[in-house]
Image (cartoon, rainbow, N blue to C red; front, side, top):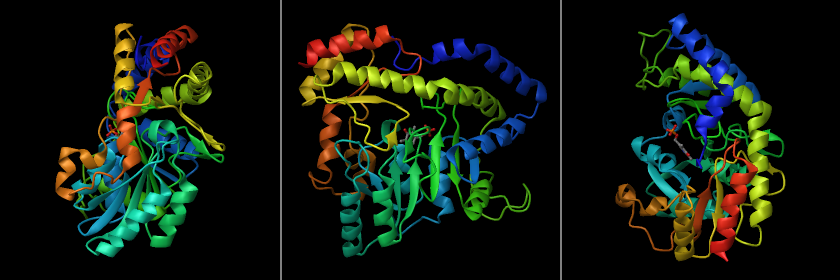
Length: 376
Ligand SMILES: *Cc1c(COP(=O)(O)O)cnc(C)c1O
């Protein structure tokens, strides 16, 4: 069994993907070719914002977002303690100060009440200026943007939505990647919408931010390529990746998102009452980057993972270490042991099970039968 079966997906889409790749090879427009512009237009329309600026990967998308917002030395940026390292890494890379915020036990996403507490602490300490919050749509579920927005407005914070795992999710009918001042996503192969290498994108309604992002991704270009008006990066989406994404985006819209939601519903039906299953609150729709269950403690989690492994079923611990306990973040501490109790506890109890649009009912049954046997 595959954790995320990209090979199966390729078999289904092979004819169109092969043709798309051949067309790009024949066109010789390998950088910024027509498929890049077409994809950007299609994704902006889907997300429901004015602009999509594609780039090299999801981490660069976050880095460019911070550059666009002018985040740098002396600024505090708030980020959930329970996320993939890249969400926080980019803050330090820009010379700003990361402040870790606890998450909600149910949604795995940033806790607006703790965000407010951490902003107030930062203001009281007086060393850094609260500038932005990077809210993450973890495992495919959008964060609670109405609540995050209230805090952001109260303290003048910009919102960056890290939608690397969230693309395709919705909240009250509005699509993920469109909630922040800037939204970002990743097209890493295993993400909800993935390409065949690295890729990413930035989303915004602001003409000014879009123009800045477009400049930053090509060496801070000005009126033309060899007019450089700011220090930027080299981070473009390859034409080849854009062409592959055009094919995969059609499948994503036509049936993949629906199929992965059906798989998640099957899991939840079989596993409710057995383990803590993921909750999709009213008004939300998840793109199920992961299906993550919670066990009662680390011993039961690790025992279940071993039993699954023995049965040939892959599972993953996303994530084993909270951001404030990562070695690389030690210089930003020292951190109290109870800095983010929920995130710290989740790291010991979570387990992500195989899920993707092509998983069969038999596979889900097989996983659930082992979970039911071991977790009880
Ligand atoms: C994958 C991921 C990123 C980084 O995306 P890359 O394309 O791998 O650089 C950032 N944030 C989150 C939450 C992610 O899952």
